[in-house]
Image (cartoon, rainbow, N blue to C red; front, side, top):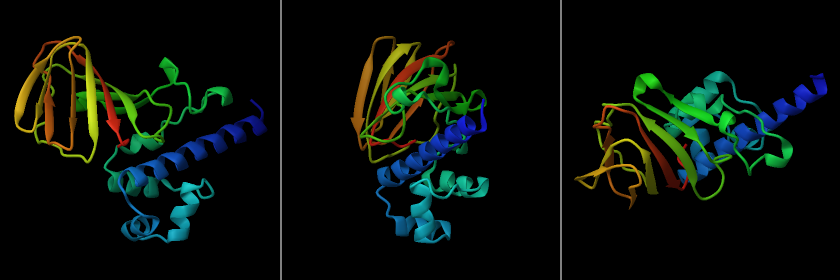
Length: 195
């Protein structure tokens, strides 16, 4: 690989990172000024990061991850697709992986990026894994159970779902668990994007 090609791929990765940071800020309804204040940085610096003109350090990425409540791994998993596929196609072997098997939940981003009005995630819930505390997000969410058993509590009511079942809720507290002995695979759609 030539140094020009390597630099071009790095520039594309930096642009993808910049777009993700901007999409996360917008999805949370935050202004550049609010982000700058929370990070202790200037508005100009945050703007340059969002435009791909400044590359944040690992410490800065950790601060962004904490602020947006996302795993820092989200910012390190940019596999730059071919130009004609960028923003349109995600190949099975090039999905961004979020989470670890130790946490009981591994997710893959099926959407090409965090832009747009929704994201699609493939979630694999380990047997016996559970979300103990309910979460409440300002989102509309839907899911389709590909395989396994999956319990979801929406607004205090538990629902047991199996292969082929689906769900949808908006702005309600939820939590989940896998009561089965096999992993549960769920395709999850979230609007606006939260990762």
